[in-house]
Image (tube, rainbow, N blue to C red):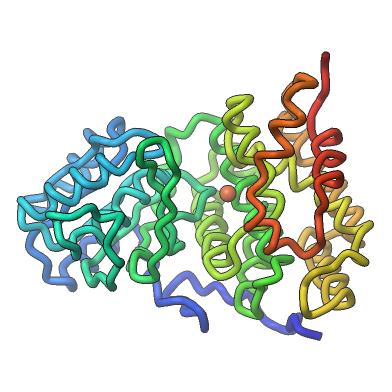
Length: 384
Ligand SMILES: [Fe+2]
């Protein structure tokens, strides 16, 4: 038995430290001032989504000499991150606050890392070094968990650049439920599903550890216990959803995601659906597939271990077994009115060849190209 069932909810809401992770301080909105004061920093740069800047300026009025940066788009490019790092230097900033969604976190993480490098050379061609510039994250979406991971994604000449550096994990996170108030309902639904998928995919990843499994278990339970009240506008549930997303982020920071995420990326670009929506559509079918194919287990801990993990996932979802758990996810998608997009026959080939084989290596069972094709046939609604 590799997964220890006999633990209490590991999430205390403050300074949770994992074996595999650096400490991250969890703050309430009112605790932010005191935390900033304790850092003794003189000048912060606030990286924030453009539409939030006005509100951020008002809320950070107490923070003297703050420099704002909002000149970046969703899926930010290298140029934006470079300009932000240059502004950080030019204004002699020594601290960072990121207020926004995943793209904002990506830019802020890049600034934290790039500010340590030689500005005369391309930042992407230099080895990354540890950065002790404090970074405080104020997530305004509950889903990606980007504020808990050591990954940043930026685009350079249209190519995706993945940056991984332990020290870019934000030092502190503010759970401000009011920041989620302005989120469109579809983004809320897709976001909570993203956190849920992170919980499950991390749970069964071949890279899972006892620590990551604890995070996964907690995140899955928190999402299911809170999603209805969260969508109805309840503040406590919103805070719990921020917590769930953060914990699920910690889980994938250890394990990375698996086939569900590998298969979902093309759905977002081909059909314009949100990332969490696409991930849940793929995971729903993948759960059923995994339950039926434990004999294809590639986790070195073996088939029995995988079957135990699937039972633990089912238990976290309050279901009798993994088949019932897959059914529960299907019902959740229906309840949230998140249907599969209509696909054209020609899309099948594009979808099958879009899957990143590296992510498949994290998956607990082997997936052949035929398996992936069969799965997509089930995931999508097929037209002519
Ligand atoms: Fe995700």
